[in-house]
Image 1 (cartoon, rainbow, N blue to C red):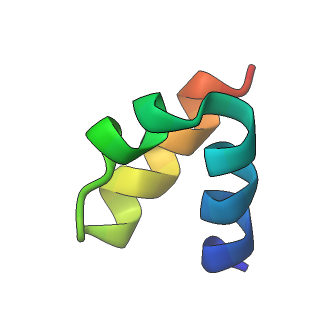
Image 2 (spheres, one colour):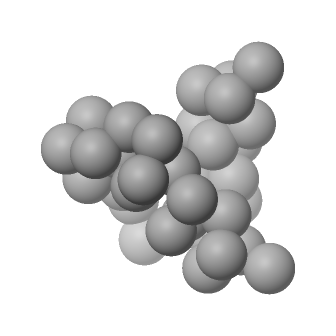
Length: 37
């Protein structure tokens, strides 16, 4: 689920994830994918 991925990213990247957060789910998913290679 998207929300679970976002929560996982918060755990991995902390404040960096909050700074990258955008309300657009597709954009967020692309950020999540590229930040967790």
